Image 1 (tube, rainbow, N blue to C red):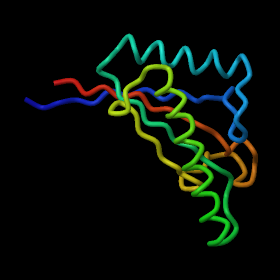
Image 2 (image 1 turned 135 degrees about the vertical axis):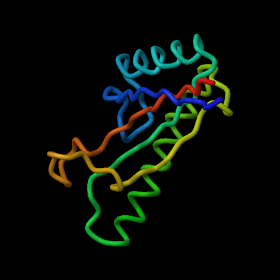
Image 3 (image 1 turned 180 degrees about the vertical axis):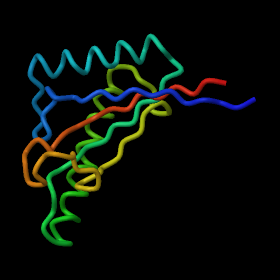
Image 4 (image 1 turned 180 degrees about the horizontal axis):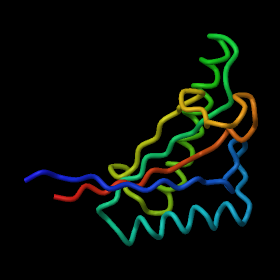
Length: 121
């Protein structure tokens, strides 16, 4: 029998890319995501953080580290809300997946997305 993967992407547009303070709308967004995930225990969440384009290798390395730290920060917040670590992963994308039709240096490139995946047998 072949298994089939189903997934959905959520952009955490209220969660800041930088800083530690979460405003009420960001907390609400994380709460909503964790509520969904806790209700459907077969879901896996992959947090990805993206940045604007890097202009050189040194900047790319820095952006990779920054995006990796931010993705881990969000995954940790979700873990604190009750999601088990085995259902969470985080990846710093830096500028590896820039949005099409958006300038590479536009602040819209800085974003945090969560992919919810369910494998069906």
